[in-house]
Length: 221
Picture (tube, rainbow, N blue to C red):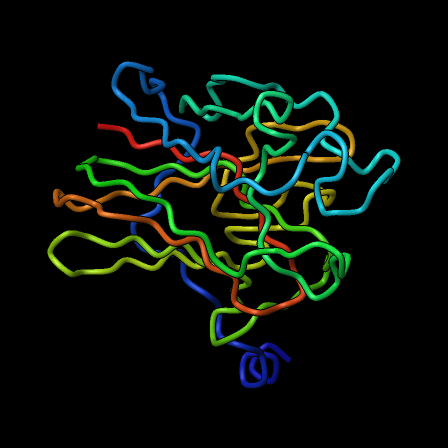
């Protein structure tokens, strides 16, 4: 029976190279970090309509801590939507989102610095609890890290490994559930960087029904 299963089963996906085990111990000190400014790129209000639906009842990020918070041993700046025109999260495109809202398919985050590690807070998605992703890895989105020497590092957001549905039980294997409320949670993902300047990061949707979420980005020097 085992032989029959192994013959027909899909190949197991190995852990993505370069990911950092979390939570960090000891934590990163705030003075050793650079928390990127995502405020101009945000497009939804997590406290009232995180995925574009007005008056969604309990389906908001109620109790979300704002300002600088240490999550998984990493300082992040969580944007207060009341101080940013009602916007606090970056949420990418989904064809299941309200048609009166225009969601970006990608956002370009300027960096222009060298760092040892890079950390993302978010790594959850809305609209499609069973989205299998696309391509050989089954990814719904990706972070594309551009180095000054022309090299590129792609970090795929793969269902149940590096991303998961925002109201599901936090079981994704390669991220750390750092913040949790009712019914939501947010995950931390860490990536080791080369000792070369990073010019920018592109957060890119891969055209599946899921709506990927990014909340904050921190570079550890």
